[in-house]
Image (cartoon, rainbow over all chains, first blue to last red; front, side, top):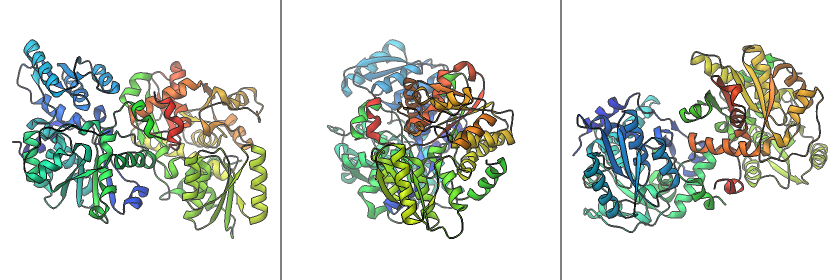
Length: 317
Length: 317
């Protein structure tokens, strides 16, 4: 299980290799929510998602002699690993389901990784990845259930807290979307060490609410039929992630699909930031549960900005 | 005719009332263009457009006793004047053509201004505005052919130059989109005084190329049938604007519609900034005329980020 010190080590290791993304605020969104909101802009991170942090951290901690890394991913982790590998001169293979968004396939290819397509099931992805590893000797870098990845993603909270403190305050709350739980677990871990009074919340679609059910029951839910536009949040919690989240996170809240779309449109029109649906889930949580946030200083992590524009065009009317 | 000193005075007058918008760069776009590009992010300005600068400057320079301002606008100037008037506790009327984008009508209304709709012709707009002025005694604030407006918009160039100098360089070129010419004339005026070696270029759609024809012939074109997605650039050059542009601007280049759409998509996907079509015209100029920009340091003004999302959804495929 990763320790908070691994987050701090990751932050040092990543300095200069990733962006220190801005904290952004919007008077209109503050007025609409009655809260004082600070958006941590990870859609402006390398590869357009916080996933660059974990991938870059993992790639720098590889066993000596590693020449190729591999993973399976339908989205940003694949692009992030492809980027991080290329930066270190390593080869990379990404197993992707055939239905992965075109934009995300193109991103992986643009960073020079090999893509192996497979059927869109977890079983097919794992089996195909096992074959790749057997054939090529690649070192596997999992998307979230990995201490190097969790530590890397936790640098989001450390960095955001530092930016708040530069402005003279500690936030009351930090909210991240939760899919596999790498970001949430890492942020919970970092914040519990650095500022234990800051509440850390996870936010997830009601149509993929395994994290809330796991958190509240104490039993990790490992299967779900996800039904949500937030394509980055369809996975279930990893094992390490679940343990850390139970230990360091205050609650997991859910939001409806229409709330995700409203939050995304609000972000697009008011902040002019083109965030992907999964990233809008943290603001959706504030809109859906206003009493929990009213009058509070809240950091919301905008996790990424990668999507097929055509796939969301029918939401824009 | 405004003097450069009026730009500098406007900058002092506006300090603290408007945003000092960031300069943003993108490694991917630098690689795609072979230039070193610095986007001046006026879509992150108050009201989502540089127009806030001129409007705020004009409203602070009103004759004593003014209680109401008025203008005609299909777009950002109307919202900017409504905002600037509200900030000073003044009433405001905006004459808008019936076909003005819904998002822009809503923005004007949200700032508390009265809207008077009219037929979508320049004659109807001017006649309706004259009636409003006669009936209410409002002070008219024109959208671009006004020395207070030109001086306010010129603060974009002054501010961007200052930001470049903080980073230790002067740019080779500054490019702004050109419609009525308030921004281009103001930027030309400012730059010719502050850094005469920096070339200032206007960029406009080939489907609304009055500025290029005016610039190259020396005769101001006052009528055109504009055909372009860039709704902010359909107007013809104002008289003061034309005179200043001839005096301080190096050239006006045109771009095709497909180049505007490509530039907008590149901005959306690579920088995650939701800019409106008119704002993409400056990057389109670099894509359309690569030899003029290769190896150069170029400031491109992103002029605004306001649009009906539904109206561009058919471009996203």
